[in-house]
Length: 116
Length: 113
Image (tube, rainbow over all chains, first blue to last red; front, side, top):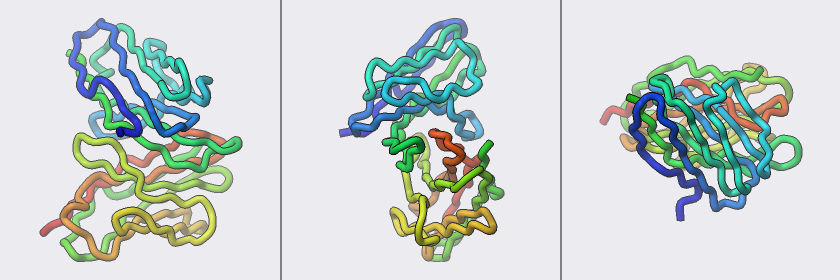
């Protein structure tokens, strides 16, 4: 069984469209994340949810909206897609202990978004 | 704000030779340090972490890393590399109460047969 699974793996769409990426983890973790990896392979955190509560919201355009229906799922919806949104988006999860988690992040395989 | 520096974009090593991939960090408070590996078109795989205790941490696939507090470094090492170790390696830090990991820009490891 895949620990952190993302769908779709590839997404090609036109500028201005709206798209969603889904993520599910079966590790029983309480924290989930979205990271963006650009064409230079640089990884930047976008959002983090702990038990369905948003705890990290980095400087990301408000066209990006995360939704966590339960602690095993964290979806990413993107409105009005732009060329610069083309990237690989990674979902990850971890188990936090206390106020600071010590656990490592487990990553999904990524969703490659191409905006034409 | 926390940050990670990986000064080498690429490291070339002959198969069978030892490896060091450099990483330095900046964080307030005690650092939690991690190394990940990424193969082409794949997600990141966890290799090892330092939270506390022994400065030499052993991880997956024969990799280890040495934590040096005075030099704020966490270099990745392997005594003898394989061609299959060729990949992109990321150092990451968590600290200062933050929950997410901050990643370095990555170091491409090229193993020559």
